[in-house]
Length: 400
Ligand code: PMP
Ligand code: GLU
Image (cartoon, rainbow, N blue to C red; front, side, top):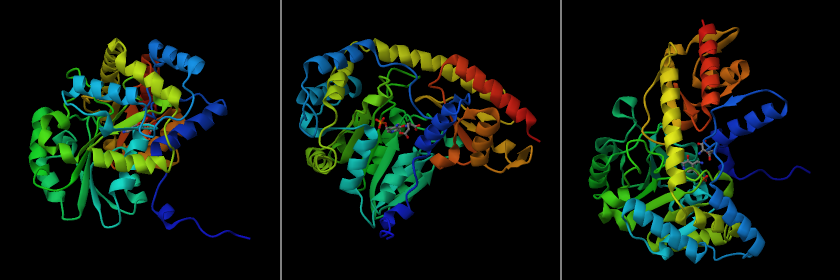
């Protein structure tokens, strides 16, 4: 007997485009196909040695059980301490909820805040999961396009124009995935002046804050606009800065009532995250931060290599991103051309045919609401970057 249908919400939600490309690359590699992947945004480094040692100690000595849902107290203290050093803002452990990655923290937040009738502002190009999480809650993502001429940054005028009485929240990602665009303190202050006039939540995703190339750490709205504190949520984690994606540790810092609500949601979904991952994260946050600086410097060199290499390919334009580890390249001039029988009408075709023919995996800009562009992750070795650039240049040369 055919069972009843899936929930209606499944008609409006798409799978994560980044994890889909990741899956496709894994399938092709399993078939023995050699792929250069600049697709999924994941550090190619191993986690720092002291983090792995802390994880091994935890496996030998425990504790082995559940922890409180929001995370071990020493972990939440370590998060507050690192945030104070980085942002100059003080939080208490009861304002922190630790989840299975920043994505999970954002998901809990979505469950707590968004419902049908709500509008959530998302400046685009934007990371794949923001809009889909809003949709899963039955609320409406309101995409606010940010043009390349404005540095892919939300302007105060565009923000003011997008706010309506239904606006529940703004999700701001700086440095941004996929563009690398980063707001400076003055730009954040100007946005805060608009936000101050409206009773909406602001969620700042600062997961790439330490992968910033114009200074040590990207400016934070939390430091620039302390008056927004009672309606500001910081989302962060160890996936990017410490190359700890597989540990699945992220968190949010929010006013205590909102933190409690997120804890309630998590208590019904996953309880606490893996205890060993929590102990490894304490070591990352308390340990020597030289590893973060070293990785940043390596990304910096790769950033120049990929941006210069892309810009040298006829028909591709690419600006210099100031943070994260993505190049966001404009391929509009190449659209409408053909590769053999295949028409490359848009960025989705470009990414698909590039993978089929040149065996280079990238993510189409459309996945980030940025059509006409490709996102290339430079969290890859210089050898892989060079090989991808050579393959892309050869591919572009065959288009007619
Ligand atoms: N936010 C942004 C902007 C990201 O690029 C990612 C990458 N996965 C995340 C959140 C989630 O990271 P994680 O769940 O690994 O902490
Ligand atoms: N954030 C990374 C990316 O954008 C990892 C995959 C994901 O979580 O979306 O590629």
